Image (cartoon, rainbow, N blue to C red; front, side):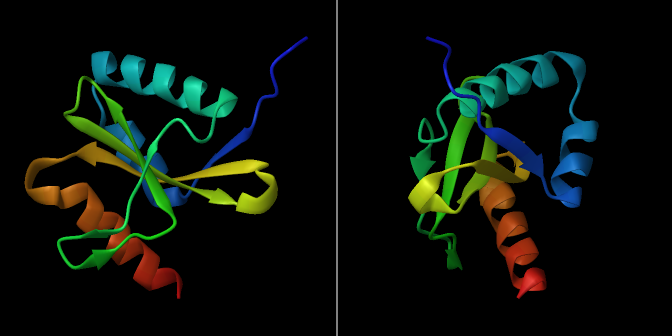
Length: 107
């Protein structure tokens, strides 16, 4: 029996994050995104990070633990689409702050 593949979508800003990655980092990020397409719950849930409310978002580690892929599930009660909101380094929790800003812009 073939495993179900979930659709992966990037918000436009996350596409830009991805384009900025170097080749070896992209390779590992691609592996993690492929894993995500097979199991959208493989990441860890996020809540409040440095006064940024990321409830409903998840993080997935890439390149050891130096890169985070931050995503959310669209229609979480019946997961069909995994939406990636950011990919970046964890330094000073910057990727979480960036995703928090993106989330505020959408409101």
